[in-house]
Amino acid sequence: MNYQIATEKKRAPRAPRPPRAPAEEALVSVKQLGLRRGGRWIVRHVNLTVRRGEILTVIGPNGGGKSATARAILGILPHQEGEIVKNRRLAIGYVPQKIQIDETLPLPVSRLMTLTRNYPKRRVQEALDEMGVLPLLHAPVQSLSGGEFQRCLLARALLPAPDLLVLDEPAQGLDATGEIEFYRKIREIRQERQCGILLISHDLHIVMRQTDTVLCLNGHVCCSGQPRAVASSPEYQKLFGVSAAEALALYSHDHDHRHP
Amino acid sequence: MTTDIHDSEWFRMIVMDEFLWRALLAGIGIALVSGPMGCFVVWRRMAYFGDAMAHAALLGVAAGLLFGLHPTLGVFAAAFLSALALLFLRRRVALPLDTLLGAISHAALALGLVVLSLMWWVRADLLALLFGDILAVGWRDVALIYGGGAVIMAVLIVIWRPLLAAAVSEDIARAEAKNVMRAQMVFMILMAAIIALAIAIVGVLLITALLIIPAAAARRFAATPEGMAMLASAMGCFSVVVGLFGSVVLDTPAGPSIILAALFLFVGGAVGGLTRSR
Image (cartoon, rainbow over all chains, first blue to last red):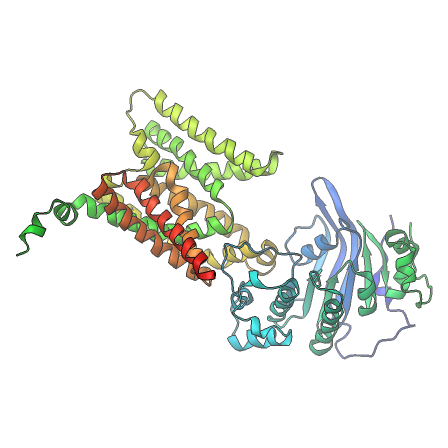
């Protein structure tokens, strides 16, 4: 049983990133995580670490346990195995997967921003402004387009001045251009705020180019490492097809992990 | 000069009769609390759930009579236990939720009626149990309604934020707010409490209507959740006043008249909104 590859080893010398002062601070470490639901393991033996200033993208097929892992890290789901070590006093911003707000609930964007905590008006406006949705401050959330709503949710996640952002499929409901723009914004946020980002996505093409580390989850960690390494791994090609790997063919082939 | 007004039968009934004022006070007390509670019933789509709890209340009345408990206490216990049973069954039984709720809700009603009729030594006023008898409330009932209502309101305010967050997104609430599960459990207790208090006013069959119709009527005019809650209270109070006086004037049953008054508000608002949006 040796599915997992220690992500720690993934700091391959071939792609040195610009050194940043607190860059190596581990914000959250997951060790041998196992989640069980309805008598079966959704994921097991998951190891991952999100560091300050790093984007870790979790990809994988539906039902592969991406969302469940993120929700366990957030404390929404209990975990049955392993441990989740969070930096003390870690401020977390969270964009959940798909939320449908009932028509019967009158909820302006301003109220959505202060749903779980109060923030000064100025701060709410700044966050909305940063995501370019300040004019929607008083709009009912049900009137927003998919893209506008996701931007508002990301603005909401920025409010606690997060050390760690957990984004579960944050670009859903956006068109292709909007999506590229959205991911560019996420990189910008990382750059400016030096926070760590745990990004869950199924969109391989865009994500693979926007991330530092990729972790492919299908009940267990299939492969992880830098995008180029993951894209060329046989496990990845088996899951997503060779064409998905060829889309990233400019990356060189390398194996720095093993499989059972 | 004013003798002809003073001699009017309605005037004497309305101004002089204590039972009417008591009924009015009791109804307003319930409506103030049922507004915000009803908003959550609407937001969380719990109308049928509330129905099932209310129907089980009949069993609570029977149990209260059987064990010599205060009927309000019996109803509270029965409603809360039925909520627990429903939550348990929802996880264990592979039936669509509406089927499960429909079956349990009406089975509880039938069981309550049968058990009450088997207790030959009591003569329960079935009409009052099913549709309420607001004109029969005494001062002690009024005190109970305001005391209990104040407690319900206070607790609801305490759990408001996590409860509302969970209505928007269960995931966000559980990730960011504290004690979400506890807030949801406490809300079930509050539901049982408001049902126990309201049963005297509108009876087990109309409690859900008193909860959801003012809330639904308020939706169109509210911009925030808190605004909707307050508006629902106001509309509930208005329905009680109009329904009660309507029932005196037209000699109709009070509980159903209150519900109809609320319905007029709802329909009026809906029609008004339709014409405005055109």
